[in-house]
Image 1 (cartoon, rainbow over the protein chains, first blue to last red):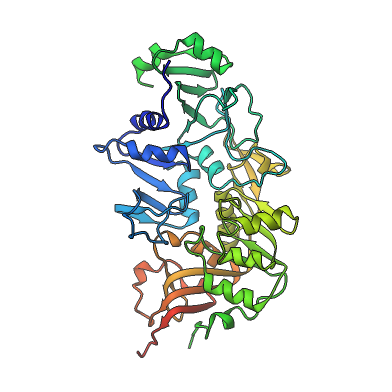
Image 2: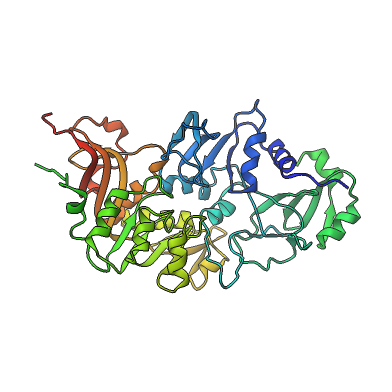
Length: 221
Length: 227
């Protein structure tokens, strides 16, 4: 069985981002998606700190401390891009103007609850940033994560045990072994990486799964 | 004649008092008014409540204010970062109180204060730890959390250019919290690269109207109206 690399996962997410989409990519793994957006599509990246039309990192020596992304790394602005203040930036999210956000996760429940901001450990210093606004604000929230933790536990769960970021907000999960569509009906398997059977996937995930590969491919849902 | 120009950063912060609440602009170091914060550290007022997105980065600006032991409480969205060691140490020692707010709620609460609203209902945070104990209401089939405005005695912000009436423009993503914090404080002090003559700023591109600004300090230089 072959698991997708982080780059392959990013490539897979990028395929599902359509022409004309306004997209916010979370810090960490989701940032990789920017490298694989199809060049023939106009897709605008929003950065929570006040950019729409965010471009790649500048050449060395051309960094500008006033032009950074949500991870506080130097970036550029595409021709046609613009700047705005924090209230406008979060109105874009909360107001449902962002089409897709892609976030990392500690856990996602089969009904789409997300836990990605706090481990809940007593000595951890909590930090939330824009995660809660994005998760419930974007029209669609995609999660990108490895299915299993390093200890082998499934991160797709029936009920999150980590502190929640948002309720019933995740519509899709892109993992290293499968793509899942979530909703009130539970977790539907959209596709499985090469060589893995549905039964083997179900064994890994340890939650009830619905095999929706045939139907979802046909409808393109 | 209205002239909000302060003679120096030190003069601009001279009345910031012990126990004051202060909004500080910036997302990380972009938009952080470092010159005003240096003056505040030199002034010596402590027991401060600080409203910022973060809790200091590296050694300068807000991090230096925390290191100096002047901060009693921070209201922010994202304190923990790779370079937030001065906050981390004070927090773990129990010397700083932390009120964590989702970033969009932080912005909306600041904006609500500036706009004179009594409260907001926000969908962000519903069902999470950050909404525990807060009133919720179902509106049009969706759950919202009641959050109150955040106002402050002072706002220290960084802008790009300004004039003596306090009109401001910003530079790139350094705009971030500046425009909304300017509206939410009793006394807003803007640090700008340059003060230009009245009329030199195109009215179409003024982001913060001067009514929201009480003092302005030029780091780069001042061009007088008659210059």
